[in-house]
Length: 116
Image (cartoon, one colour):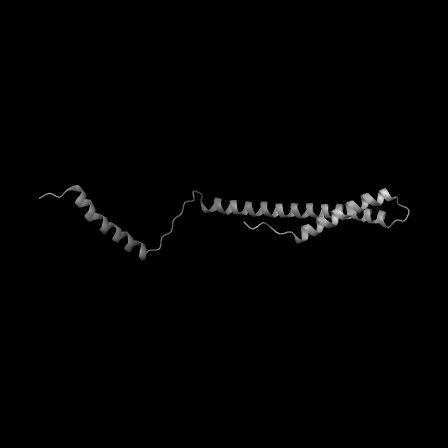
C-alpha cells in the first residue's frame, strides 16, 4: 500500500528537526562572511589606525588653536574692562563678549552627551 505524499513528509520532519538539534548541541560552528584575505585585512586595519591617529592629532591641534584665539580675545576684553580710561560703549561690548566666552566655556566643560 502506497502512502500519501503528505504522510511521508510529516514522518520525515520530526527526524530532521531532531537531527539538526542534536547536531547543533555538540558542535562548534564558525561562520565567516568576509571576502578579504588576512593580508588585506591587516592592511585595512593598519590604515584605519593611521587615519584615526591623524584625525585625533588634527582635532587636538584645532582645539589648541581655537583655545589660544579665544584666550587672546578674552584677555583683550578684560584689559578693556579694567582700563579706567575706556569708554562705557567699549566696556559694554567687552562685557558682552567676555560673558559669552565664559558661558560658552562653562557649557563646554559641564555639557553632557545626549543619551540615546
